[in-house]
Length: 207
Picture 1 (cartoon, one colour):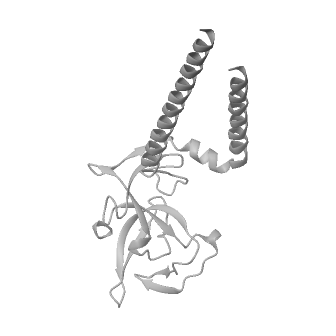
Picture 2 (picture 1 turned 180 degrees about the vertical axis):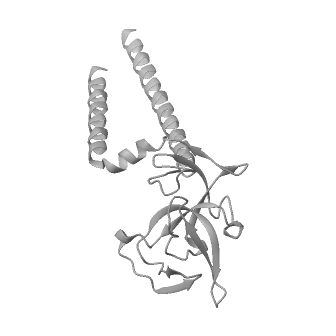
Picture 3 (picture 1 turned 45 degrees about the vertical axis):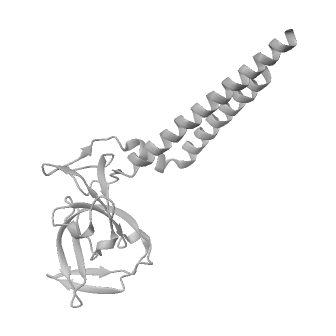
């Protein structure tokens, strides 16, 4: 009788562990999906080039090109995130230089290094071949961005309500801290993983 009871107890414990595992995996899966959905619709501002509309450490809510808006819908005044080639630290050189309205702009090869920049569309330029480029500038910058931006370089557009940009002040500082202290954060995550692993091993032996 006792052997039968022990088997029932072991079976109940195993079923409970399986149920708990499935619940944990489901919760983790839901978390990952929600994280991806949220993360693809926010962007962290890392400089003050768009001050006072937004500043370093702010979160902005965005929509994705090709999914939630068409590149043909872009217009002057839109604040966009685009793949910039002109950043000096990237070491790129323009394949062509265009002078337009007394200002020199570079046109870059798609194979060059890139860095995302969040600035405002202030105009456009059409080449002799009919190719359309956007002229972009940070609100707080004296000069325009020295690159004629192809439509396909634009990846996201900041959402607005009644003409006001959707900005969450200072929420993005944690993300900036993580990027600037990768080793420290990795060490912390590693220690947390080791702690949880040790706790689970002890739990298995005790059960």
